[in-house]
Length: 272
Image 1 (cartoon, one colour):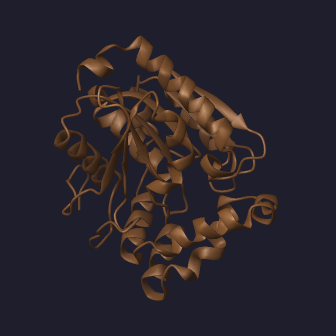
Image 2: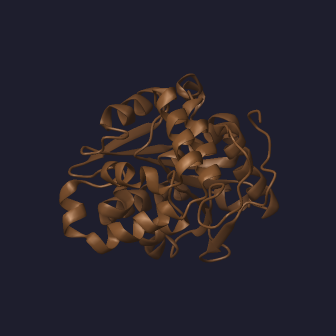
C-alpha cells in the first residue's frame, strides 16, 4: 500500500478527558497497546481530551497483510481525526508513534498544533534488520522476539527492580498480532523522514533517554537540529520505554510542553 492510503480496517481508539478541552493524540510504540500511556493519561486528562489509538494488530485491534508505510499509518490517524470532528490536535508519540507524528507534522501541518516525540528516530536503519524481524514473527510468533525487545525497552536494573511491570509489558508485546507487528516493522524499514523535517514548524519537544539502545540521544539530536522550533531533553538513566520506566519525568515534560502550546495557540481548541 502506498503512502497516504487509509487503513482498510476501523482504527481502534479511546477518548478520555473533558469534552471541551484541546485534543491530544497519543501514539504508541511498536509492540505496545494504548495502555502504555496509562501513567501519562492519569495526569494529562485533567487538561486535555486524550485520543489514544491502537496500531494495526496491537491491543486487540484488527490487522491486515503488510507491509505498511509510515504514510499509511499517518493517514489512519487523519481519518480518525476526521471521523471525530477534530480539526487540530496536539500529538505525542513514542518510537513508531513518534515517527507517525513527524509524518503528520510534515504532511498535514494544519492538523497538528504541537508535537511531542519520545525515544524516536527520523530514520532507523538497517532496513534489512526490520525485514528480518518481520519474517521471524510471521514464522515463529511474537515470543520469538520478546526477550530481545524487552532488553532494549528497559535497562537491566529496571528489569530487576520492577519485574511485575516488565512482565505486564512483555504480555502486551506477546499479545500483538504477528502480521500487524510485522507490517509495522516494514513501515520502519522503508521510512526516512529526515528530508521532511525541514518543513516542520510545529512547536516540538524531543525527549531521549541516555540509556536507550534502540533510539539513542543522537537520534533525538538529529530531529531537533532539523525541526525549526524543536528543543531536546535527554533523561538520565532512561531506556526506550521511558514513558514507563521514567514516567514522572516524561509526564511532567509533556504536560508543560503541551500546556504552553495550547496557551499560545487558541485555534487549537477553536478549530475542533
